[in-house]
Length: 371
Image 1: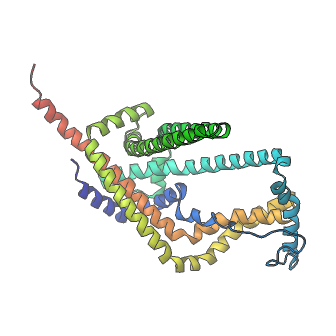
Image 2 (image 1 turned 90 degrees about the horizontal axis):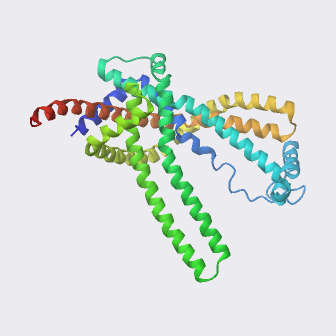
Image 3 (image 1 turned 120 degrees about the vertical axis):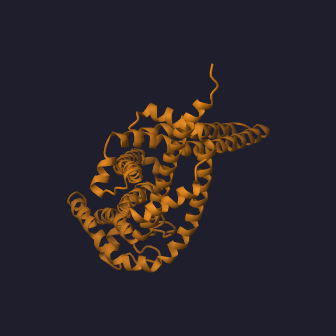
């Protein structure tokens, strides 16, 4: 069995002694969902304003300024018809969906270009520090991650996610069949289809959770085999599975420990979020200054092709991510610390398991009976 306490303490020392890793931790936090990304989700919710003419509703005087008047007129001409008569603008909705899909794919591609080299660099930097005691700078660390090993980890993640996606697809198909059965059936048939659908959904959700947990645990060995030993994708799966199979008790126990630490960090993060409120207020000023640069750039470019409030809206949308990035920088740093610590712990676990395998293998050969 591995010494879990020793690994946890060593991971803590690496986190505080290897400050270059903090930069990579921030990149990991930003590319895997940081606290700053949650601030913009509710900015346009809960608005019950009714557009009932040129004066708007009693709470908003749309004629109080030329900008509000233009904004209201633009909304009436371009948005309100889509909401009132959506069946007449199917082609418009299709183009909007295509545009959003392309935007999501571009953002995902950019994030992947940053995330996987960063993750590979962190794994290799911690491993090299353990082997040689050498700390490298950001440029050298990035070189450790910017190679084909990062691409292989991306492919590993893609393959690992396929079973979960298949389960979700089956669940969606069962939901559709249940809906059609309830729509076309009567009485007892509807009730039976709904009961069957609920039972199947429960089983598939349970299977999805178990599968996600198992794959997330196995992934720790797959990606480290690829990152540390430059193994091919197939070899990473085979060797990673063999390592896990021989040491599943140690791996499972470490997963439970990290799960508990993750829950503790989540609760502490909620407390820290409120403790940092004064910092958010202070950072809002530099956040506005930084956000003005991309916001004005997008506004200037958009105003060449479009007039009216649309240019302002796109400029604000371009500025918001930079504003939240600056304002919630403390939370991003804390999130990055945790990600570096978790990655370091699993890298140390992988190293110790390999060391135990090297020790136990000769002993097993010596104890094997001679033929």
